Image (cartoon, rainbow, N blue to C red; front, side, top):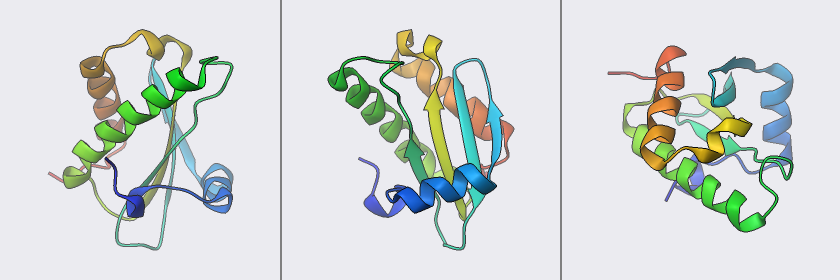
Length: 114
């Protein structure tokens, strides 16, 4: 599970990322990111009812994305707030493909410190 300190929770944090952040995307995900003043990175997820009608389906996808982000935490640079929202064609992906495409997008934007 993604630690609470690494989650975007407040509406103000989300608004700050959406207002001031930069956007990047691939065929399955769109992310918006903004540098924060903390010593760790935080993640937020936006999954609309238009994408998945049932709350259980939305929650399953959020849990998978949180698990992926937790596995990426050890390699990530700190000081970023990142909001991830999947596109329509991502709901048919399995866990491995979700991981690969999200990792590809994070590496593309140089959030990784190997």
